[in-house]
Length: 248
Image 1 (cartoon, rainbow, N blue to C red):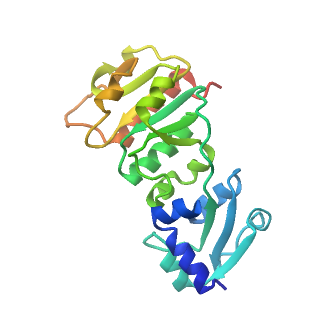
Image 2: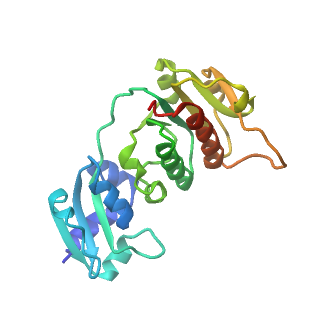
C-alpha cells in the first residue's frame, strides 16, 4: 500500500520546483503511462488503484509498483476524474540540438494545453524536434503532459535562449505572423524550423529578424486571429503534406 511518506513525495511533484529538485515528474492515465512504458524514458514507480491492474510490461520497466487507495489517487491527480493509474518518470538530460527534417520552435507559449497540443501535433506530422524559449510553459506541467497524450516520450523537446539557438541553426527559419506571405505561395524545403509565437504577443521581433521567411495562413472569413495551436497545426500540415516533414 502507498505509504504516507511516498504520498507526500508524489504530491510534491505537482510543483515545478520539486520536479526540478528531484528530476522526476508525474504522468496520469492508462494511455500516457503505456506510452512511457513503451519509450526509452525511465519509469521509476507505478501507482494503481484496485481494479486497474498494471500491464505485464510494468514489472520489467518500473522497479516499484504500488497499490493506492481511491482517496490517495484523488489527492495525486490533477484530473477532474482521477485515473486508476499514474507513474513517476525520470526527467531526461537535455539532448544536443541536432536538426534534421523539420523542427517546431515555440516562442513564449504560456498555455499548457496549447503546449501539449503543439507537441502532439508535431509528433503526428513527422516533425523531429521541438525547441522552446526559456519562458515557454514547463513541459512537465500536468496539463501539458495530459494534452500531449504521451507524444512527449517520442519527440525531443529542448529549452534555451531561442534567439541564440536560432542564430546557431543552419536550416531556414519560417516564423508565423499575420503580416507574412501566405504559406501556399512559399517554397518549402525538406528541412527547416517553424516558429510559433505566444498566444497574445506572437513571435518576438528579435526572433522575426532571424527568419528566412515570415509566413501566414490565408483567411477565408472574418476573425482577428487563430489560436496558436490551431495555426501551428495548419502550418505543420501544409509543411508535412509538401515535404513529408520527417524526411522519410
